[in-house]
Image (cartoon, rainbow, N blue to C red; front, side, top):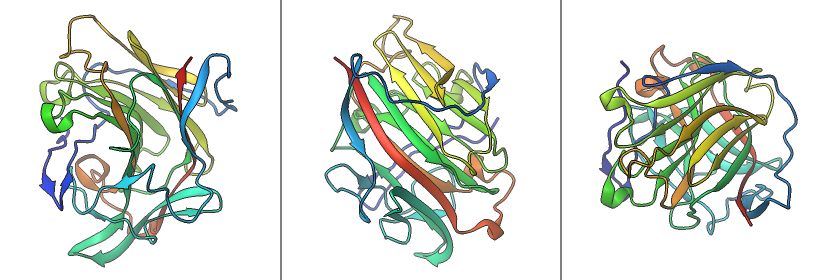
Length: 278
């Protein structure tokens, strides 16, 4: 069993647990890339979005994790333009091999905490992932009550995780008090896609009161249902916020080492959009 995330506190940032897509109930599939239109306007309304058309991130939408955060990862997260910026109409999160604040790598992790938090809806992110052993990009969500309830009671939804030593496999997972890696019950699934470092793919999640679904390029590969047995199995009736990050190494991403010849690592996000039903 893999070593799982631990929560710490540093630099006035609430340090959060990231899911590893392993253990528990699992499934796998394979999809080929296909165009994914935005949801029909008759069913969904755009409530949050960023097209990343400016060199700097909108502070009304995004905040930053700073410093060492979790999972024995090797990077120091910063808000510097060297690590996170708009470039060519995309968000660029750049992992760099450099000495900084006592660490050998830098990267970035952005989130909407305290800026945009929501209950139920569709999250859609079009992204091109980095490549190489040691890269660990993710798109995920956490309950806004993590400070009071802690992890995993707050609930975590992993819309996309990928590790560089298994580059074609995308992982979708949830973590709850009843279903998580620490007791061997995590709910997760994987899907194999065309090289996500060569092409953009659309990673999406639809969240309803009775279930949630996870997609790549419009094809659903993971469903988690509300069993109706309470918050230990379904904490997803409360607001959550969105995170996008690139970790380097760590308890999962670093299991086969870090390929230093692949730096700088470039994680490109074309857009982030959140919809809710009318």
